[in-house]
Amino acid sequence: MGRVSGKVALVTGAARGIGRAQAIRLAEEGADIIAVDICGPVETVITPPAGPDDLAQTVRAVERTGAGIVAVTADVRDGAALREATAAGAARFGGLDIVCATAGITSSARAVDLTEEQWRTMLDVNLTGVWQTCKAATPLLIARGGGSMILTSSIAGLRGLVGVAHYTAAKHGVVGLMRSLAKELAPQHIRVNTVHPTNVDTPMIQNDMVRRSFRPDRENPTRAEFAEAAKTMNLLDIPWVEPVDIANAALFLASDEARYITGAALPVDAGSTQR
Image (cartoon, rainbow, N blue to C red; front, side):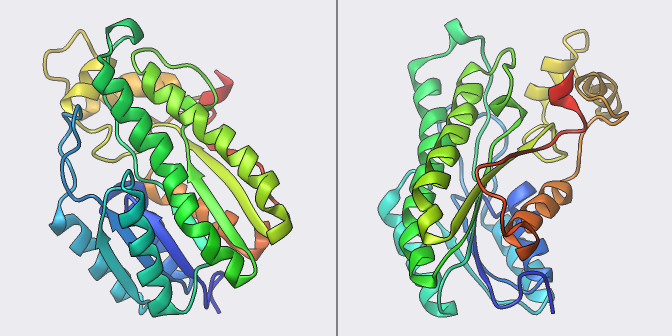
C-alpha cells in the first residue's frame, strides 16, 4: 500500500517543475491526480511559460504509475474555472483529500521600480490564486471528512529577498493564509501547512533573467557560473534543490505520517533561512 493510497490530490501548476513532481510523487504512492495549469503566458512574466505539451508530459508520467489523472487547463486567478475543474475531478474520482497549491510566477525589479501591473499580477497569481485554490477545495475536503492542504511558499515567505519585493510579499501572505486556514479548518479535520523551498532546479530559475541577477558580472552566465553564485544562498554546499525534494515534503505532509502536523512552515532550503 502506498502512503496515500485511495486518496485524490489536486495539484496546481502541474505542467512542470514542482507541481509536476508533486503529481508524480503522490501518484507513485497511490493517489489519483487532478492536475491544473494555465499552460500559457502570464502578463509581466518574461520567463518561458509552460504549455499544453508540458501538461501532457505530466499526464503520461502519472499514468505510467498506474494512477488516474484528470488534467485541466485553467488559471488559478479564475475562481469559477478552478472550482469547476476541481469539482469535475472530484466527481470522477469520488472525492478530494489532498491539495497542493503550487502554481506561481516570478518577475524581478526593485520595490520602487515595480509597475502596478507587476505588483498586481504577482499578488493575483501567487497569493489570490492560492486562496482561490483553497476556496475551491475546502467544501470537497469537508465532505470527505478531512484532508491536507500543502501551500507552496518559498524562503521568500520567511525572509526578505532583494529585487522581488512583490514575490516576497505574496509568499509571506501565503504563510498568513495558511495559519488562518489551519485554525479555521481544524474542526473539520483539515490540516494546512506550507513548504518553503530555496532555489529549485526548474525553468523558474534556469533562465537568463535569474542567472543574470546572480551573476551581474556576466552578460550570459552559464549554468555552472550561476550554480557557483547560487551556492552562497545555502548553508549546505549545493546551489539548488530538485523538484522531487519539495514533492517528498508535500507527500509527507499529505500522509498519515504527518497526521498531527498543522499550521507549520516547513523549510526545504538547504539551510538558506539560517544564513
